Amino acid sequence: MLIPLILSGGAGTRLWPVSRHSYPKPFMRVSGQASLLGRTVRRAVECADGAEVITVTAEAQHFLTLDEYARTLPKASIEHRFLLEPVGRNTAPAILLAALDVQARHGDKAKLLVLPADHLIENMQGFAGDVRRAVELADMGFLVTFGIRPTHPETGFGYIHAGAVVDPDGAGRLIEAFVEKPDRQTAEQYLASGEYFWNAGMFCFPVGTLLEVAARTCPDVLDAARRCYQSATVEPLRVTFDRECFASQPDISIDYAVMERADRRAVVPANFDWSDIGSWKAISELGDADPAGNRTHGHAILVDANHCYVEAGSRTVAVVGLDDVIVVDAGDAVLVSSREHSQSVKQVVTQLRADDHSAAIHHLTVHRPWGSYTVLEDGDDCKVKRLTVKPGGVLSLQKHFRRSEHWTVVSGTAKVRVGAQEFLLERNQSTYIPVDTLHRLENPTEHDLHLIEVQCGDYFGEDDIVRLEDKYGRS
Image (cartoon, rainbow, N blue to C red; front, top):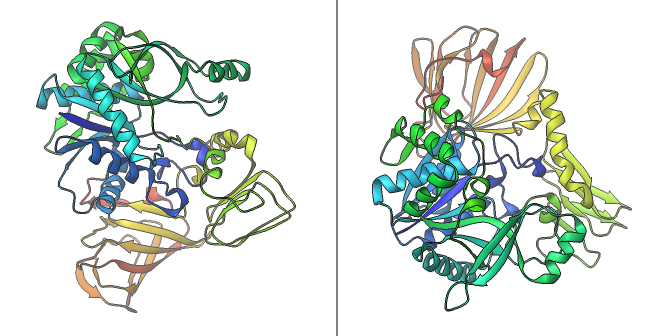
């Protein structure tokens, strides 16, 4: 049995302002198509030989992931199981917890195919063939990873030094060493030798073999994972963990904890295309360019500009007389960077967090389990939002002490509670919620509900929400 394990975590800070803490890189739609997570789900389902896919994701992003899966595979019969992380703890705890979960339900021989959610792979046929080769090597007792053939002397990736061939078909090779990110000269030597591959962070191994090796190479990490799993709440489709116990696990990657110290390890040289979409420079090289080497999305006008990438969003963006620049307009924030400095975008996020600026966390459109809201105006004395409530979506029963609210339905039907009264609002109808008044909004229909919310007061922070009941378990 081969069970794909999708790792949907990470901040993606190099891809700000599109990737943010509350809506990170796996949910990005590269070139306006399906999200990176959605594409990974499709690859996983095509490779699975059982009826199960496991996803490790942040507990706060569970609802986003469910929505993405529904859009990607609305009629899929395969079972989606979730391991929900209350805090981030790197890949070793995530993979070991998944291995313990699979071992408990399917035994030692079940195999995991570990897939990061934010990789871009177009050649599905080549990928599926390499997965089959990895499974064969895993059945031989190897811990298997996938190596990407370098196309240039990249200094931003770790490398794998490949050794002797280990199978009759020559598809797999022993791993001599894992190598840290090299300098330019060393990377050029790796490229010329043909013996080194980029480390893609994808793996295949039987769970029993992985746990046996982990008991030797990182017993402290495995023991912490066992304690965490034993204290978890295990349900048919999800596993939730005690926050304190989960946070006590070592913050370490599977490479450091297991792969670099293991004995029987092999690499499958990839026969598929691959990008980790690790920077705006990487995104700027996707797709076809115009004769001047420019690539654009949205309404962009370029004059005397060469080798530029422009993502215009909802506004018109003009670039005049510039070469090798990246411009990304996210509505509430704009990034302007040279191609060669795009890796430094993460420093912008560091500064935003130091300033406690919301642009590090949220977009203008903020997603919630019940739907989403978009901030249209944010002043000192009022705040205006456009709310979209999904069919069956229910906002919490709540009240505020420092603001009143006005709701006007734009389309759909709203079921509203204000104080002790409950009533329906149709299109172009409105209601008023005074300060310190219990209220709730619900969409009782099978279509999206859209309305405008106008808040009046002197403070509009989320901590002025007092929830008394919540369908989604929020405090």
